[in-house]
Image 1: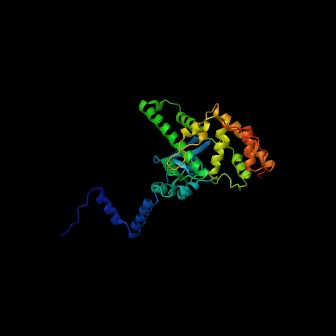
Image 2: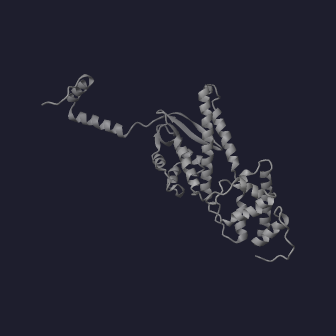
Image 3: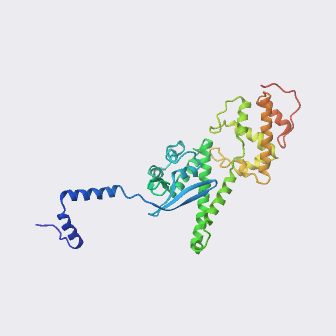
Length: 337
């Protein structure tokens, strides 16, 4: 019994043409079809520009298939990571992301999008990542921060950048949605959202800008006789105690207690924010800068005279006593070199 179904219409014509082809021609056509399936055409950037985030200019593109893409180098710069674009692939194997649910993110980063139009060389493909991958990476870094996995100063910097970006993206996103709902997006200035993003980022950056000079910590190590490991290494935990004593206890009465109330320790003993982030720009920040300048001058003087840590602290106690603390009695100084 013949179970072959009748073939009609275009399919019938296709079968007829196939029967007229030689076996070699049919093999060639099949190979081309297989290559097309496994090697799809490289998309092309139809639009390109730069996303300004703080002091960074991040190249971004829209491809002809509708995908929004950020360059590899732009991804690393956005999270405060130094180096070239391939650094974004290395970060997935970083200790701080081990054990987190980042498989989908890892796959996306390990398979960058090849596209035409991102390189100044005509026809040369560039590597990029969908813009949403940047948000996913930021969320993974913040997950690592919540788990207490950000240890070094550089890792903490990643967390700060990620936090800043997530906040900025959320605020710009709601503004864009309101503009779309009201029809304002059709009449708003071209760079309005970009300007709004830049304003938010600058405000966030100011919230955790570096306020303690590296020299302050390096001089502590010199006065204690410890080898200085550099700012990239974790400082001894006791240094935080010295900072509280030498700085916050001596700027104003009750200041340390007030700052600690604003950033209480979590269950792991960590504070979510640095104490200096809660100082006011008009009064607190200038007082901190002036106080640190004085401390560094005393550090330099003590080091130049070969003094050790205890004698340095006694010098500070005389000139910059703790606010509300009793003055040190004028006992003869001991040579603690």
